[in-house]
Amino acid sequence: IMNKLTDLQLCKRIAEIEEFNQVEVNGRVLVSLGFNCDRVYNPLTNDALLNQLIFKYEISISFNFCLISMITDKQYEMNFTDIPSLKRNCLLLIIEAHKE
Image 1 (cartoon, helix red, strand yellow):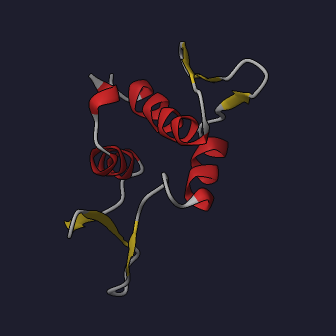
Image 2: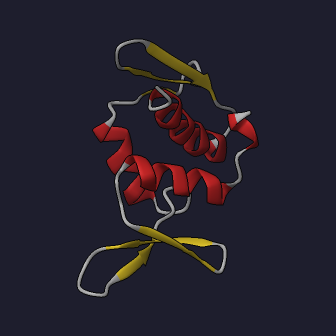
């Protein structure tokens, strides 16, 4: 079911997990940075945002085995086939780990 999430739904869910105030405008997620300053929040297209999440949640990436993993109270793993699926699956791991 989670693989069926749209890019917009993925970004909205990650913004919720990160506890950002957010609004959807023209099919994009905007997060409030305070002082009337909003920015587009899309870790799928912004590598800096994605890298922050990878470091924060300690996601391990094995390019040899095309596997990403994250350990919290249990281990989460997903495979990837290319860079877009790597990015998407990193976000899906974070969402999966925050389902409880």
